[in-house]
Length: 391
Image (cartoon, rainbow, N blue to C red; front, top):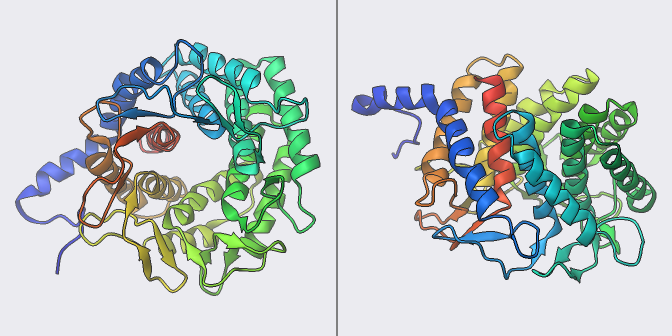
């Protein structure tokens, strides 16, 4: 039987042990010395402004590709977070330039509230849909910039977006609709990222209204999104949040909720340990036999649907273990380091220093011939959490 990487025996054990001990320092150096400079240099378009969607495999910007607004927001988050941590002081100016571009180009052009879905490379609107998922990341970006800058105009933009989310996206069935216009099926993913954004907004503003909004989304998680019998988080739902069978399970989202629930517990005092433990155990059912990495999709019975494995679920399983380590779970810190080592070995040791591989098939062949900007948010957040908790 093949053993999973991380279940180390024999001659390589001392080398692996050293790598584990040093992994947080290794990853922080990779981010600060390579990823942040790479994405500030190649990832910003000096002609039109804005962040590019991806780099090619030699690390050169694709400046012609359309630009998702969520990626603009994620990059703003990355540079603002890095500046706030003291990792990359010049990130403050980059984040503010990115925010200026976002506010100038991505607001709905007819004066209505909210942000559009997709821009062309020249900054014109390609898709005016106001997707809840995109609004969540703009809210996260605004919260992170406000945490850094305490700029009153940024706070005003944050409050304006929140008024749109509260007034135009709230669903009578709980949570938020998919966007304007509303679509089906309902997805848990926008609810999850709005939950994340509410926690970040509370951290930045200390406004208890964001605690309340996060609490309402936690209630949606408990009553509708999470199946306590099968101990899985569903992905797709009917308008009234009834489950769509067969249930699709994304192990990366199971892990992501573990970390988010720990954040919710931190700001409210509401205990979340039982759900965190169940979600983590469920996520770990869907792993590659050789690498130990999380796979992309399974079903509610624990069967694998997709044997591909993307980068972002590996960041989320690391964050899940980090959350459990912070909560005092025995052995969680070691598991977190193991997950970080897997993430580094399989995804971040890229020929372009500061880049990453996005997805592999079951034969370990890379499936994506670019370096997507969207992954930076996942990678930087995982490394920041590792540095904060594991040191």
